[in-house]
Image (cartoon, rainbow, N blue to C red; front, side, top):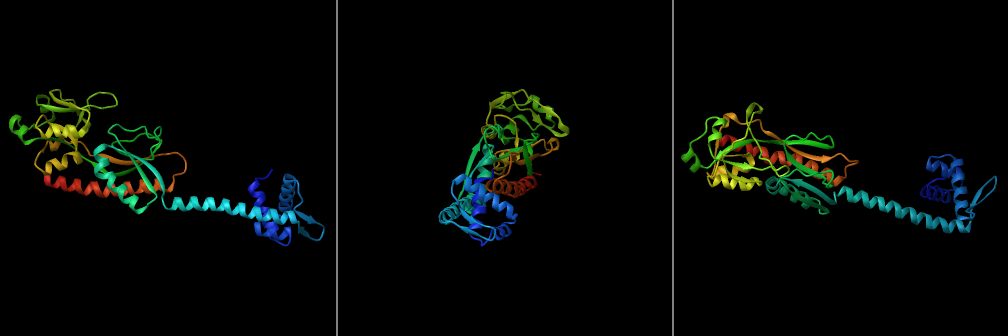
Amino acid sequence: MQDRLELLRIFSAAAGAPTFREAAARLGVSPQAVTRAVRELEDTLGETLFHRNTRSVQITRYGQDFATQAQAALQTVEGLFDASSAKAAEAGGIVRVTATSHMGRIYVMPVLTALMQQHPGLVADLRLSDTPSAVVDEQIDVGVRIGFIGDNRFVARSAGSVALWVVAAPALLARAGEPKTPDALLKLPVTTLINRSDGRAWPWAFHDDTQLQPHRTAFVTDDPETEIQAACAGLGFTQTTEYLARPHMERGDLVRVLRRFEPEPWTLHVYRPQRGPVSTRVRVVFDALAAQLKALCQPQADAALRRSN
C-alpha cells in the first residue's frame, strides 16, 4: 500500500492532466504507477474517480470534488514544511548552553546576547556551573569547557587557550616572601579549591606535567571566584585561571609568581553532543561561540601576559 500523501499527489497530477500518461510524465513515473495509485485510492474511498476506456479517461463529479480537497490538503502539508524551513533559517527556538560561572557571565553571555539580537526567534537557556554538566543526559545543546574532552559522544572545537597562574596579594608576599620553586609552597599558606564532583582538593599543576598538593591550607572553598577573593585578602597563595586573575592583577590586588614553572595553557573547547542532525539554531550558536570566544579571550590573555612579563 502506498503512502496516502503520495496517493493524493499522484491523483492531483492525474486530475490536472488530460491523460494518465501525461500525468506520469509530469511526475517522472510510469503510466502504470499512476493507474495503480488511482485504483488504490478508489478502493480506499469506495468511489470511482475516473471513467476510463481504451481511448481516454474522464474525471467523475466525485473525482472533481475530491481533487479540490486533495489539492488543499497537499498545500497545507507543504505549508507546514515551508514554515519549518523558514523557522530553521532564522535560527529560531531554544538552545541550551552550559559554561562555568565566570566564563559564562563574562564571555559567553555577550555572544549569546548578540546572537539573540541578530535572530529574534532565538532563545538562549544558559546554565552556569563549575561542575561539568552531563550534557547528553541533561539535554544541553552546546557547552563551553576548559581542559581535555575525551568523550567521543561530543563534537569539540578549540576556541583558544587559558593559562594557569599562581598569584598572591602584595601584602602576603611582603609578609611571607615570594616562592622560588613550587616545593616552596609546601611551607607557605595557600587556598584550596574543592572539586564539587568528588569533594577532593584540586591538585596544583606545573610544567612537565608535575603536580603538587600544598598542605598549609589557610582557606577552603568549592567556588573559584570566592577563592580569588581570599587570595586578594592575603589569606594564601592561589593557583587559578588567567581570566579569573587578570582583572585583579590589573588593579594591583594580585601578583603573578612562579612564572617559570607554569604548565602549558589549557585548551578552551566549545562542544556539542553527537546526536543526529544538528538544527540551524544549534549550529549558529556553536559556530559563533567557537569563533567569538577565541577573538574575545586570546587577545586579552596575550595583553595580560605582556604586561606581567
